[in-house]
Length: 302
Image (cartoon, rainbow, N blue to C red; front, side):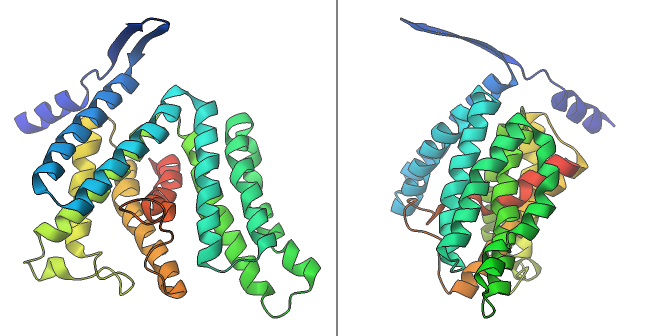
């Protein structure tokens, strides 16, 4: 009972912190959990930077540099509020749609449909969330270009992939806005859990049961990785002071399923990565595949 009491005491600690910064014309006076999240992020990046520098492995150093850029480019807009979060979600969705269109060989017209939804869904989530109830109808209308074009040969395939992309990418990323003010918390937890899954897969690989792959789609996604992801999600959500059974399932299991889902598409396209422009990761889809499943799950059950 003492351990449980200590855990509950730590979990319910007040994580609101203040930040007072006066640098000439710049005046920042904040108080809340967002300041705590900022310092946790900075601390982990500093510790990670020291670790990868000590390892002297170029690929790890490259990934760490990319993490720093992502933390600033995505974290600050989410930190500011819903409007800038909607803008970030739209930008991420547009880039992801372009990569997805190449991955599944969508036509230009179908890709344009998804690009429009990539912007409209986050805007709807910000300005009028009730409009997202029309998502199933929009999925049906994703078949419109094929129907009007009379595409008998590939119309079914085009319609299915366009409708799937509208949900998997555009609708999912709109949940960045719907999850405010906890959007950054979820993004941070997913990133940390991805690292924990990698550590679990590597650390437990000597155990036979841990080496068992979760799916033939990706031999690197193992039972050991799933154990690592579950433990990592529990630790990081406890550290951040927001944990529930639903959120734990969303972050740990949802993240692994998101990885496998993209692996299936890449196997079909016979490519290693969805892109080549993001140093250390490949493309944007390779970085946010876990997030695309976790975001709606965290909103619905978290």
